[in-house]
Image (cartoon, rainbow, N blue to C red; front, side, top):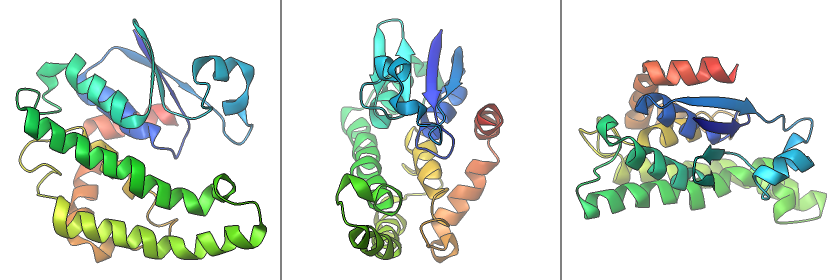
Length: 205
């Protein structure tokens, strides 16, 4: 059985939704960031990075959302969460998820994790002020150039969709109005109605 370590309000929700969509046999374990549990000896033995998600599999432990999402899609091909028979299309899925991971998530983290990049309190404040602009630019790119409709990749629902939904849940906190992006807002609301999304949210408490 797979075991997913998560923290509420984090990108781990994307992997959680994907597991539910795949019909996987899994359990979840919450890591309490407020209690600094991510830096406990027990959790660091699972993920030395001290971050979530981490997925315990029969072959070892996987970390990083794009890797976990790809693993879920490939492990449960009947769920059709990625175009596994088309190398180029699968690379496009990976490209989208890599953008969320390497660019959008990092821009968001400048609001809540400024200490990763600076030491002075004034620098934290400057980074926070910039977030609405940088996140807004990222989502304008997604809205105008990347979101094909009705799902990220077009007609086929893929592992891109729970990842985009998860990061979109941070928009309000980042000072960005989702209503500015009609296609994204439609995607967000349709995602919220999916059974797997509701299941994952209930399981996260």
